[in-house]
Amino acid sequence: MTSVLRWAGALLLAGIAVVHARLWLDGYRSIDVIGPLFAVDVLAAGGLAAALVAVPRRLLVATALAGAALAAGTAAGLLLSTQVPLFGFRESLQARFAVLSLVLEAAATVVLVGLAALARRARSPLPDARHQHTAR
Image (cartoon, rainbow, N blue to C red):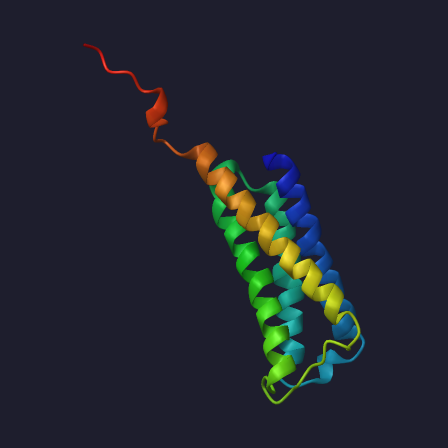
């Protein structure tokens, strides 16, 4: 299951990177502050996607949590910018790829939090107390 979640999380993060790269190329790059943030999102999501499939198990929890934080933060930024101007820019959910972006970000957050929990449980050094027996 860990392998499936690794790949699913990586593909979702790659999707986030592609959507933001496309939007950046389509004109978001000319928006003050937002343009550079889109570029950072592309690099971070792409890098974390690659890292998810390449990191050793001991770094999987941290990598999955970093990806989840990026996805959730990106979704929060989009939702916030539909309500109030963010760095002077107000977005709409009617904008190109807005709904797709939210779907990818929400799915990535759920998958990556699940992956982190599963990987943490798998590497936990504490034995399951239900299986401990005491000698009498």
